[in-house]
Length: 474
Image (cartoon, rainbow, N blue to C red; front, side, top):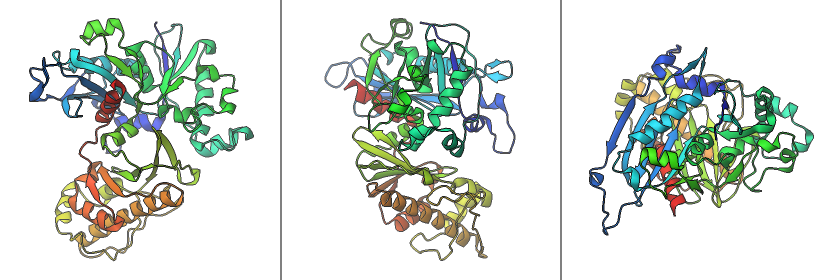
C-alpha cells in the first residue's frame, strides 16, 4: 500500500532542530545529507555465527528519531550494546518547506543499512521511538505525494476555552487532541480515507505494513486514556474518530518485517516489528529504572524529572501528567531552571574550573531561584516569577555553589510535590543530560535530596527502544 503523509508538529520542535545557539538559524548545517556518526561494533560480534552454546546469537534493534537526527542501538539478550550509529536528517525542500517524511524515511533505511551486514540476520525484533509532538495524517488509499505543514500547537488555555463541557474530567493532556486532530483533518482533502499516526507509528508501518497502529505512550496526546485502556466516549463520539489508531502496549509484537524490506536488507524471516514509544520515555527506559520510587532527573537546558509510581498523578496547574508503563505510571514535571541559566552565567570552562573549588558537603547559605527568564511552571506555577540570582558574592565559586544548590532545592521540591500529589515517593535518582557529568553537583544534589543519586549508565533513547524490542521478542 502506498500512502501520502501530512506531518504536523509544534513549531518549537522545528526550531529546536536548527537553532545554532547564537540566535541564528541555519537549516543546511542542521541537516547534513546522509552523514553518519559514531558507527561502532562490539569486537565480540565480529564473527557472530555461533553463540556461547553453539546457537546463533539473537539481537534486538532499537531506533530513536529525535529532533535533529536518528540513531540505532543493537543489543544482545543481556542488554549489552553490540553496535550503534547515528545520522543527521538529510534536507529535502518542497518549495520553502522541509519534506520531513522523505527525510525520516531515508534516514530509517540508511540506519538499517548501517547495521553491519553480518549482524542483520541475527536481528529478531525492532522497535522505534519518536517525538510525541509530531502527528501525521496518512492517506489509506494512496494519492498525492508527501507534503508538510508546520503549525503552532495551541496553548492549553485556548484548548480549554474551545473544549465542550463534556470533556470535563478527562485527563488534561488529551484536551489538546481536539485542536490537533480537527486542524489536521480540516487541511486533509479526503477525511474518509485518513488515518492518524505518530512519527514512530509511521516509521514502524514502513517496516510491517499494517496501517493504523500506535502505542499508548504516543497516543496519550491525542486523547487515549491509558487507565481506561481506551479512547474516552467523548472522543469516540466525534465525527473524526475513525482516524484514530488502534493501541498496543509499547514493545508489543505487531507483525514480521515486510518481505520486500527483509529481502532487500537481509533480515530474517521471523524478525518481528514491535510497538514503539516516545523519545523521552525511551530515554527513561534506557536508565533501567524499573521499580516504583526510582526516578530520573534530566539536567539539560531545563530540569525535567520522571518518577515511577504505583499511582497515576495528573495536575494541569503544574503541567504534571502520567504515562503508563506496564502496571506502573511514569509521572513527570519540568522546571524552567537548569543548564540554560548556567550558560547565561558561566562558560563551560568556568563551570569546570569553579566546580573543582566547591566543597559539596558544605551547604550554601545563598538562596536563589535560577531562571533564564521570567516564568516558572513546576514545581511552582507562576508565569510571572522573576529570576532570583542576587546577591552575588565576591567569590565566583561560592556563587556557582549557590546556583547549583538552589537548582538542587528546586529538584527536591519537585519530587516532594509529586509525592504530595499522590505519587510514590522517590527513593533513588538516576541522572541524565549534560549536568550528570558534574560530580560535585551530583554530591550536592545527593545531600539536598537526601537520596542516592548517580549517573545513569545508559541515557540514549535508542537503547531504550532496543529494550522494548527485547521485551517484544520474549
